[in-house]
Figure 1 (spheres, helix red, strand yellow):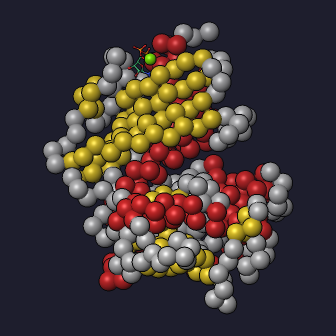
Figure 2: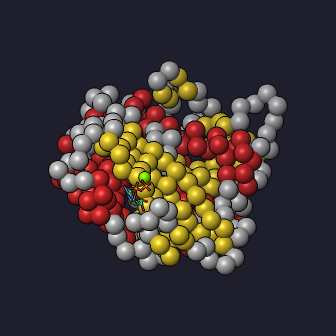
Figure 3: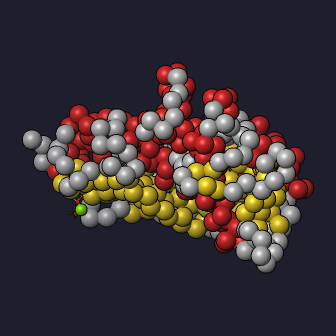
Length: 322
Ligand code: ADP
Ligand code: MG
């Protein structure tokens, strides 16, 4: 049985490119570039809550880092460093090899150094801290939305939640459909390039981890504004569209989690610029609604159906639209 130190040496010690000192001492040392702010975020993944206990370890390694990178994407930051705190029920070297491969493959793709962490025995728990840099004063915040802004989202929404609904047998998908949606659930792609390109263009941004409605609400709350979005404008995959008459699919689109796309707001005048940013980043960017000034007595966020009526959430999801 390898010791804790041997496990760290074997699976988590890699050359650090952007650090003065990486894994191996009591702490790591990094230099933040002149004129930049340090951007820091942490996300924890718990077995049984965020993933199934028998989840594929390489996919878990990918996802644990991807969800953290997604937070930096939403800030418009360059990712640089990560730490990894792991609780493991036992020293399963096959699991560790696959997990660290999934983690490090994504880390290398985004040029992120793993500079430290902690390894301990316990119920499986994965906690990643990500650190990045952003030129002073340029980070994208939740609090910058203004009345008159367009609301945009990247990619398509709801496939990950649709896969989860199928895995929980709340909806039946064909095997090929489930495979495509499950890839979105297990291997989210952080929108780093998009976040960087949106600095100086978007007024506010957030990554969609808890579902479009919940995450857009955070922008509205922090910016003290209101919004209307149109259901028919929401970007959905051809698979999700096929099931849109079902509550589970509609809920996945509006309120499903795990998409890790970006939702952002920008002025009308920025439309052409944003279209070019989408082309360059090779990602669909879709306008889904409008920010307006809050009005007493009206809901902060209204979703309109094709016929103009406002949709109402129902127990367990969203119903009776379409
Ligand atoms: P200490 O007990 O002083 O905290 P550790 O034995 O926990 O030291 O860690 C030794 C070194 O290995 C430290 O540099 C620490 O950051 C690093 N480390 C431990 N676990 C991990 C991990 N899962 N991933 C990356 N680095 C790790
Ligand atoms: Mg330690």
